[in-house]
Amino acid sequence: MSRLISPLVLALIGVMLFGNGAYIHAKAWLAQVLLQRAFDKSVATGQAVKPWSWADTWPVARIEVKRIGASAIVLEGVSGQALAFGPGHIQHTAAAGERGMAVYAAHRDTHFHFLRDVAIGDVIDVTRSDGRQFRYRADFSAVVRFDASGLDATAEDFELVLATCWPFDAVTSGPERYILHATLIGAVK
Image (cartoon, rainbow, N blue to C red; front, side):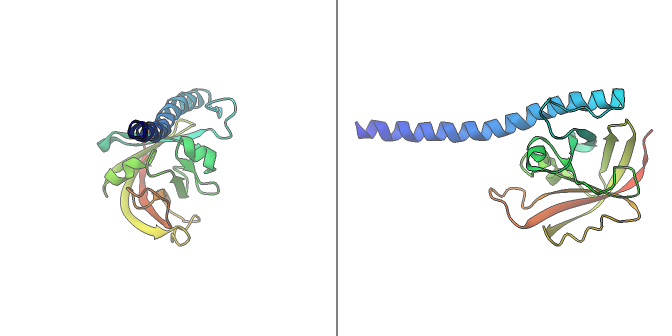
């Protein structure tokens, strides 16, 4: 009897762990669908639109790296709840296309998983929720400690930084962050 119970218990635990992992990725995918709808409505109406009634955030931009087919809706703020659903715009940094440094952060295993495939020289398009579009070129990347990034949010140029945890394939969090820096090429519209 115990020979039968042990494999069943192990199989049940395996199914539960797989289900938990699948749930996280399914939630991330569904959130991006709802966020895309809210973002499209924001662009059309000029008003901030929450993706669901209880949300404490709203879409502020869409980032795209067309060479690799990557796209994500960026939310206002980087609270734990916001980052569970998409990249977040770090408060008190510039808006995309404005003078200064716009900084977006996201989890490495969901919304910024694609950063591992972005190459220096790639074009990054950012569409704000007001419909204005800006084009950036990735010019360098670095791995830094979370408390010593060297980023200057009061920069005088027109900059974009995408940040996530490092290393990409780690299973636990650590003190290092991967940052991808890009400089504005110009407005698309």
